[in-house]
Image 1 (tube, rainbow, N blue to C red):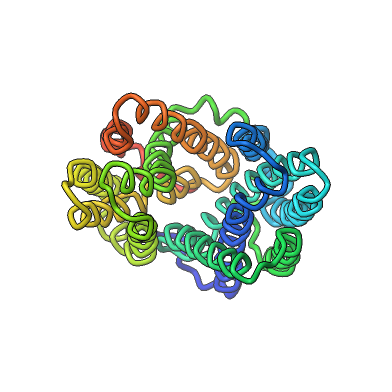
Image 2 (tube, rainbow, N blue to C red):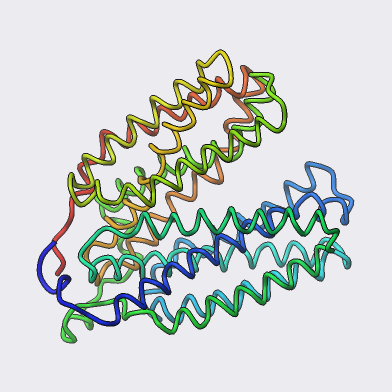
Length: 394
């Protein structure tokens, strides 16, 4: 990278720390409420199909906001957008806490607001993360996403502790709600301005919704979708595949998922140097190839040892695709918000459609064989990786 990005700016370091904080906080929040789903189900007396419909409210909230999230962030800025969503997420968590004892309706409303606030929070922090990355002059986005992954581990650990200590769901979620506001709102005050162009240029922003017509942006969205599909199906189905198809114990199955997440988180943190050395297209192609090899090892493995070797490659290969796609979408500051919104929206389809697709195929074959379908989008990502080449900042 060259130009003003390399100029010393005392604001970059605190802005980077603030970005780590909001990624970490979002991870903690997501894992915290997710860790209490079994208790929420029991309190409300829901059967599996009813629980599925209730949880659909989260996805619905995200899909309502994501198509227009770029427009909102471009208009109001990532600082104000994230602050508002942190406060909304605090309210949403409190709503779920109230609903656990009051009935299904408040829980559904709370889950919808959780999805909505998480969707706009996600775009806001990614737009700001890309701005920090540009001004720092080095790759940072994978490490921001590693902070989110660490947050999910912390949130899940807190959830385990709360369950073990018999802390009621309502009290747990209210504590997390207060934590969200206490960390995210002050952190957002250290955010940089999103648009770095000269003042005369700021008045010529293209409407963010128009980014849906850009070929490069849509193809980057497909790349992000491929890696999101790989990550999402792993999170949802590794444990089931190890238990049902490899006859491992529940402990080994849980360890398998933890192993995948650890490999992914570690490579997000330590793999950023590869991007600066070899460039985005080469690294993403190699990442997709590693994920395909790992997935193949996992699917074809006769037992746990080879399966875990496959999980290592699968997790490491999956690590960089999503954050690199976000960075590529945000290359040009004046278009970053709209393009990140488009790419995030396309990527989130994987999290919505992946689990039911694997479940459908798993009913007809086996879960472990169904996971092999993930090779197809990863191969597409390899073919499309050239679209990740850096654009000049206008």
